[in-house]
Amino acid sequence: MCIYICDPGNMDGYQATKLIRQFADKEKANIPIIAMTANAFEEDKRNA
Image (cartoon, rainbow, N blue to C red; front, side):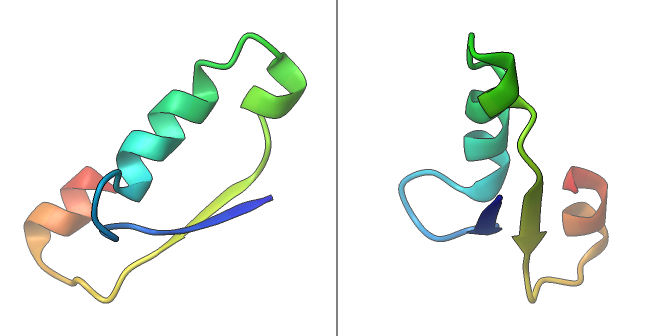
């Protein structure tokens, strides 16, 4: 399981999730990912 903050700095949780989902090892690519954010703007909701 991965727990990410959506916007920490270099790579945000959205980018990290896309990268993980592209792993060749399907077991690793399909791990549960939990993302958290304090952002509550409409744009943030759309991105999630």
